[in-house]
Structures are given as C-alpha cells and as structure tokens.
Length: 137
Image (cartoon, rainbow, N blue to C red; front, side):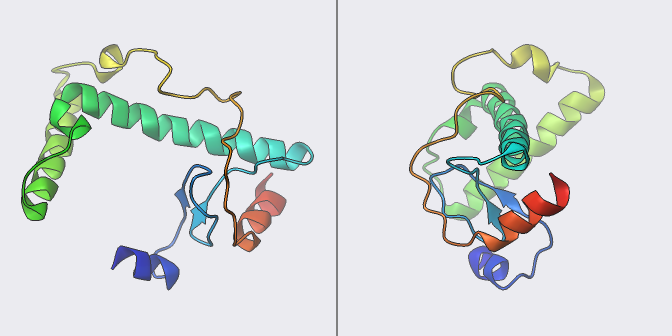
C-alpha cells in the first residue's frame, strides 16, 4: 500500500536510498559518476543526509538490541515493538536518561561524506533527481 501511494504521488517529499535501489520520482539515489560541481554537491548532500539517518538507526539499535535482530513475532506485534522503542527513545532523550550520542560508537558501518558512491545503481527515473540538482545545487 505504501509503495502504491508513493508511486501515485500521494505523499509530498522524497525518500533517500542507496545505489542498490532504482531512482524513482519519490526515491532519490546518488549519482554513480557525478559530472560537475552541482552533481558532486548533490551526492555529498545525499550521503550526509543518509548518514544522519543511519547514525540515528545505529543509536536506536544500540539502545534497543531487538531492533537489530529478526523479530519472530506477528507483524502487528513487531510494528508495536518498533513504535514502542521509538517512543521510549524519545522519552529518554527528552528526560536526559541516557545520552544517545554517547551510545554511538564510530565504526565502519557508517560512511563519511567523502566516501565513494556505491556501485550497482539501477536508475530508471532521472527526471525528478535532475530537477532537484538543477534547482538546488
């Protein structure tokens, strides 16, 4: 249902994906071979933004180990567990129970902004990405 809604343009905004995903009007991926300053800036911004999200997921997985493993529960139960972890995390941050930044270890799991772009991109909808590069970078 979410895929169909994204394809139909029912949600504003964009998702960011790595090069393992095809580029779509709602799913922006990095360029494999950026040509020029605008494309390099786009890739850098894309990678930095994705890294922020991946670090946040890393903090959540560190705080709640169950999020880093396969949950052998019914789908509705799994969804409730995930939501509960996010709520508890937000409460912990708000009340200062545990500083999530201290939980995050620097490791190779997260790429740096200067890291090379992933291989294997299967882009097939470049129009939206091209417009964003031209308009904002």
